[in-house]
Amino acid sequence: MIEKVLIGIDDSKHAEHAAEFGFDIARKFNALVGMVNIVSPIAATQIVGADPIMGLTSSGVGIDELELLDIQKSQSENIVDQTIKKFGEGLLVTHFTDYGPTADGIINCAKEFNADLIVIGTHNRSGIDRLLMGSVAEHVVRHSPVPVLVVPFSS
Image 1 (cartoon, rainbow, N blue to C red):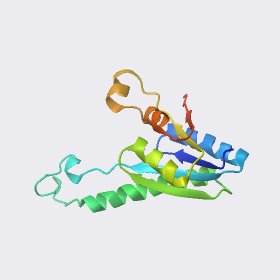
Image 2 (cartoon, rainbow, N blue to C red):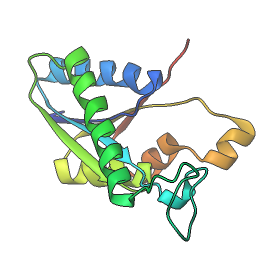
Image 3 (cartoon, helix red, strand yellow):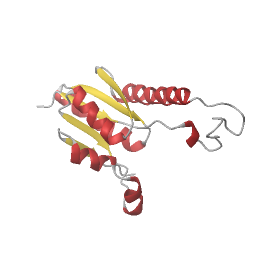
């Protein structure tokens, strides 16, 4: 029985397509929905033009890592809010934000939510791109304690 569906999303069309599937499944099973967007913290020194010693960009404006994290968190909340508005009308949705590696964050949130099913999209990477980038979907499938529905996206 599927009582709780966790949907992993980002700002891609692949994730939006998977979210639509996830919400449809939740409606069919009258299940609760959890949505997670993972924030991968970026150090200010990783930004092009940032000075690792002074913490300044070439424009002379200081970038505080906490401010950057706040911006990322705000973007994450916006992604979730927009997805709920588009597909989740009438459903109670629990929002999760996790920080760090995407696949592990999805799995951790699934455990916290006590999900019966995880729904994620796939970017359909292959070859060298998949080798270098890894596959979030593959990692989630291999390490999840619950079934995972990977929704492919075809343009």
